[in-house]
Length: 395
Image (cartoon, rainbow, N blue to C red; front, top):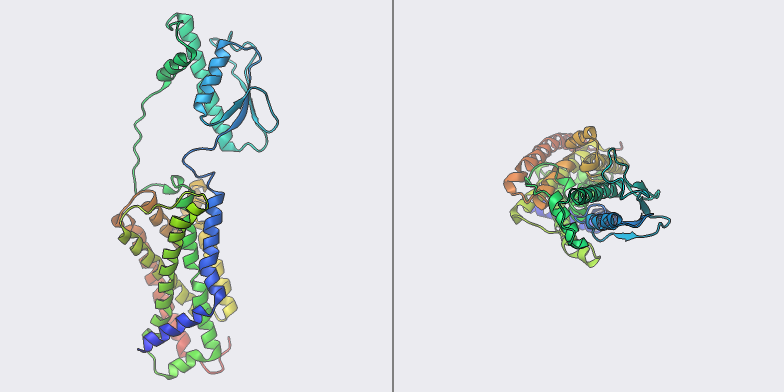
């Protein structure tokens, strides 16, 4: 009964703290929505269309074929006949048709505006290279007499595409590897900012302990003969439950809220038990970290600085703020020390790799071991702190 009364007390205090609730729910929700929208055009299955111009100084059959081949390589992209400011430009040489079979061959010239990003430049360069190779193959077949002269332009393009295409056997090994590079904006943003928000539970947890000590509440509880186990559980259980509520609310936002904004909804493949186990492991880790910070910090200000600083640092190196797929190799290795990285990898294993509970077990074990270490140290320091609490204690 005493434990239930203390838990109820923590819930009431938290309910009267709108700032803490805003940090735990509104902040990660806003980050989730903003980052999912900001990354929607970068991390998507279909690349955005390009706007470019193609200059053909000397109209010819080869130039027309090159244009058709280039359009086939860049579906949904717009290719205009005249150069326009702000558009990428492809210019064929004046003797394009006459020099297709010469060696070495001088191909088209490319020019890009300043705002053309590196990925778009690589796409256009690759598309021009393939279209040019197909045009040269057409010229070779025509020169050798191996091409039926009665074929239409579309039939020629289809024939050349068949001659230059190969069947490549692509196999995807699920539930392992760098899944962050395969995730779309929704699959990356929702779990990343959900985990970030869950770790911020350490702030109200540590801050509440400092206020209890400074106001004398902790000493009154000691005088009631409460056991250390009861005191610790009264701190850990409410915030674990709050973490689980965060988990459910932010997942629901990804499933139902993102489509309302025109973004891709979050799909939750696999066994719900795996998501529940991951949520419990994260919640236990964050609560044990909060217990440790509560015992270490000597004031509310210290608790806020330590908690906020640690969370931001773990997020920065753990692939939350910047996906590990775009990090340098050394930075990606450093990310493995962050528990946020373990939680995110487990999430991506479920969402992208279609993994099972067994597949995320190694990440859950890491989180549980860290929780045990943090909890043991936090419990020891918490006990020392409680035993040395006095009526006039000021640190």
